[in-house]
Image (tube, rainbow, N blue to C red):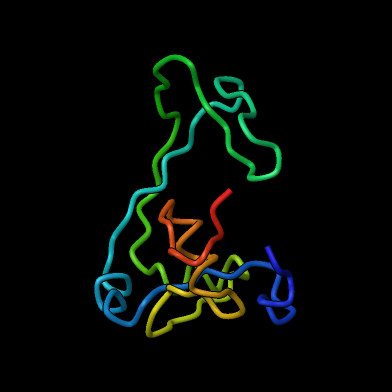
Length: 107
């Protein structure tokens, strides 16, 4: 990822305007899971997996997701369209989505 796209922010979440009202009005549950049930699957991405079913050890209702972002220091950006992301060519976005843009040369 190009760090310059963050404009100095440490964490950024982006959402399209068409989803804004649903996002703003959402009530979501945050489940706390036992850490010892998981192993790292991808260090770079920070993905963890569990190889067997896991029971939650806690649950928190979040009624104001916008405020929760502010509380956690996550910058929230609302944009017209996530594709292509700023600073990325549409061909790069097509590749990230697993599509061929038709601009790559054949081997």
